[in-house]
Amino acid sequence: MELIIARTAGFCMGVDMALRKLDQALTHTPRTGNIYTLGPIIHNPQVLQYYAQRGVQQISPHTSLCPDDTVVIRAHGIPLHIQKHYAATGVTLLDATCPKVKKAQVMIQRQAKQNKHLLLFGEREHPEVQGLISYARDYTIFESMDELQSCTLHPDKKYFLAAQTTQDCDMFASISSYLYEYIDAKMTVVDTICTATKERQDEVRHIANKVQLMVIVGGRTSGNTRRLAQIAHESGVETVHVETPDELLLDQVHGVEHIGLTAGASTPAWIIDDVAHCLRTGQKSVSQMGE
Image (cartoon, rainbow, N blue to C red; front, side, top):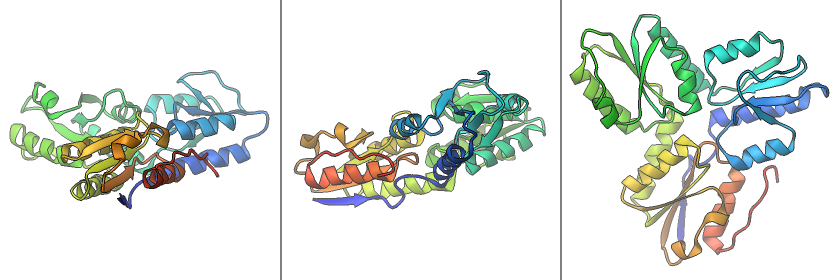
């Protein structure tokens, strides 16, 4: 059996940075204070469990805290008004927002100040999207081309297009072309999809053409991981999405000669290694983060 492992599989720069900041908080926070994250810092349950065991607690907006506490802003970012709320409480606020998401927030805010209406391609319930729209004045969120085409857009209104940073870059290009024709060739397109996302999606398409089965590893709440699985499936290859090797059905991979393996941007290397080991040997083993 040949196993092709994607070069881009695993932590992206933004996730790695966020977890390093959380590690720093665990080292430097006063013993009298607690460490909180506003929602899950990344979308991977195994990583979240590891930090929960070290005392990191998840909270919802407007939870009452003490001055010695530290609040870590998740990698997806948070709405602007919530960030301002915690900044005014006196707690230590540690911003672990992915730089690509932060850049998208700034770009959206810049366009919004020109009285333009944001058209945002993204998952409306996703925390990153909720953060992005807080930097706009008026906005419309759509999750697909079909949904966009059902929206009423006015030719005399100023629009700009942006996307959740982990969206499908090919679909974003198609949406851009459609809007240029439908509204105005001068409409502003803000390319907020991060380079790492594009590279991962391109590599999945490339590998999918070489294999009979694609295995995608990562949290089910991870938008970028789900999109990798969707892209692989749309490439015409059988696709399996798992969080850990325990979820692999070995009968499904038995006898398959060529298998591709990749992982979402919030999937740690030790889980990818465990899945690769399982695929090669047929033996399931689950390591722990930090081993």
